[in-house]
Image (cartoon, rainbow, N blue to C red; front, side, top):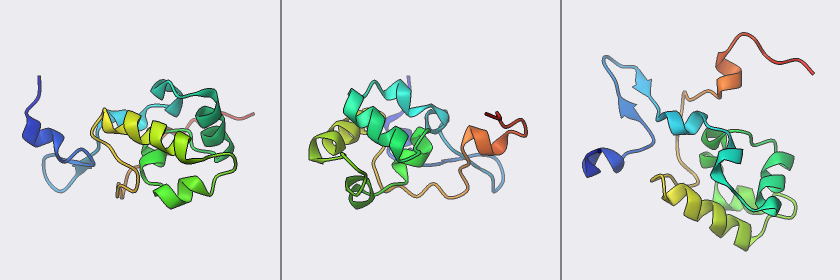
Length: 107
């Protein structure tokens, strides 16, 4: 359904003009990745809610997260690779859905 050439640059898609449009997958919640309980809890404790936040983290940053080890790292990297994404991506200008909306949920 898509050209392989387009899949090679998933971090940003050129739109009309100078606007950069990021894949909508970055706006998805990390819970959509179907991670193990340990990995999901580590991301929650690290306050990583969206895939766009996750891909900006490096391997080293992730390994500094409490209870996050090589097994969790490899699991996340494999799931991201299925969507042509990696850790340590530059997605400058990307904002999480919570940041771009005016109606922030209050607790």
